[in-house]
Length: 314
Image (cartoon, rainbow, N blue to C red; front, side, top):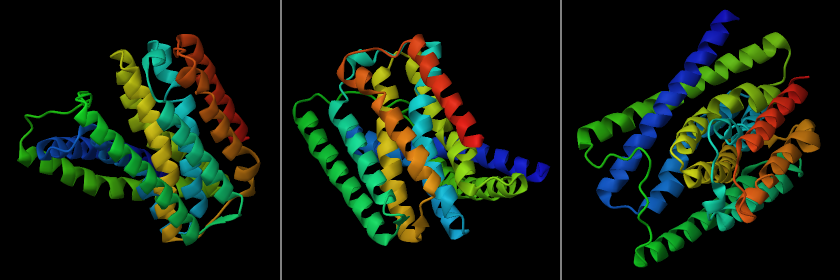
């Protein structure tokens, strides 16, 4: 069992470093090629931070653990709101009242409702995957149109956090290679270790996906959001969560459903999917009513996540 815990920990560490490397390399390559910053944020950066979830979900299905795949995504989305926004707010108030994320937030809610509706059919198959990926393509198309409008109006001047225009091509390629090699290796180690732990403790793969794997794959988003909160960049923090949640539901589960059929655990239908949706709806005051995520709300969100974990594990 100690070896399984070691593999799980090593997989998480590899995912963190490889994901950061992939994002850094991809962002700087895009800047060199002149791709708009907004498009990079919504596509390459979103893919980079969500790549661990994607690889783990696909690997879990190939290894015969579909419950781990869907549990990972549902658990990650819940963690992204309650944990990834709650913990940074404990360190510094996030001035979300200054953010304009109305349209993206509504798209995230629409993606959540669509995903839940497909789950209530009892199984996610290739048809479900095509529907989810089509919705993702539509949202990316909208983002591209918005980006062109911003560029024409000279409004897209925001810098991408971590971008280094002076980074050489050799270093960019090095970061890309490290990311592309490290992510699948880390995903493989994490899936093998966590599923063995699940069997040893008699815990289902779905529960492990909702807890251990979900928290592990949300660490890149948590690290980014903590830095954004400390640097008073609430738009980065909130946008990071909204974009990641959309990509998790539409992109990751879309691809995973094409790889193999995913039966939906009845427990997800009764509880976890509704918690995922409820946690997303908690953002309404901060998105529409100009409220800041203060330390008080940080405590509320963090305690809410701990309570969710206790319920799931018991």
